[in-house]
Image (cartoon, rainbow over all chains, first blue to last red):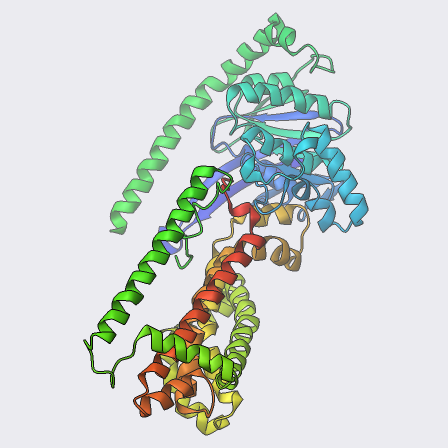
Length: 279
Length: 273
């Protein structure tokens, strides 16, 4: 179980008089039960990715605490793995060796990690591409390798940072179904950051809706579709219930998104001003 | 950026047209060299220059073959080869770790960078008299001079390679619980490899310069010594022989490193991560 308690976060940039602070998270408290699929949904810049990185131990909150299974997060751990939007594969490693990387680092025996990595690659449908370099693969294939790499260690917590954000919409829908196929039979707890309302409804058991910056939790919505969902994805997405969820969430998000657009604008203005006074 | 980009665009060898094009390239180059030698030989035979100051290709090639057949050139090649190889290998063995260190540790960089920049910018050949005073004219002073020629481009290129590593890849390694040494081995080194290899190629030329400089002043054998001796006796043919040996060595070492590069970095073709 992940327990996020009164977490706030500020980014500090520059020094001296130029020092500026940007508050990205404001008093966020949330409990994520085991075996659940939880989506973080919110406008860009609302701090949801920052929160995810805190869960992985790559970043630490300015205030508040995060515990996983009762232990405070002090850094990365073997049972919490990330999947990134930009795939972040090692370009010099072939697909198989990319997937076996975490096993290798964690000192699994060689025969062990090759077999595990190979079966993880097969599970994402890339059994025939073990010897391909990332540079020879499409975006969809790269992200499958990224997912196989994460699943190869059989993690208790799978932290996904907009994993399909860099893919085109058609591939994205296929990947959503494939992800469900993979994780609905596992017992990982999944935290999934996304901008897409539909993606959140289709995938998640619970959607945590964030405000514009600084991110606060506006609402937590339970999605009651039964699992496995991957078999009848079309019927589900066309159902009246699905539309109802979408309407409800949009009503919550509309103002926040508008605010985020203005924030984005004023941040850019500040940057421009800064650049001018620098000259 | 110090990195040489000339290996880019050499991918689709499978294609027939590319093979034809490549042969065309080789043919053009061969013809250009042949034409150059022909004009030179012609000019020499027609007496365009005083033979006291100049030599012709046929004489040079004849002298080169004679040198190899009679064996008189071998001791010089062995002497220079020893100095060059020792100096080059030491430059790598010391330079790469220093480059990695100052690339990873801002503290180490702040301490060492002023010295490195000073040496890198200075013509280190000027240290030779000092080295001779300290170490005599044996192997030691020559190898040290060669190292001062080769090591700094290695350090600076390695550092540039480390600075150029994608931070997100370091982060992913860290998220999988990789320690600093594992990150160095599995992320930093492979990522910096193209830069290190570019530095190794730049170092070849600098090492050869230093070998010649060292042998001009502190030697009784070697290709540099040969050139110096020939110069004192107005033996222009032998000067050219020495220069050509050095030049061919540089070209051969460069090609060998390029072959190594292709072997070590099979992912570099058409990579678009």
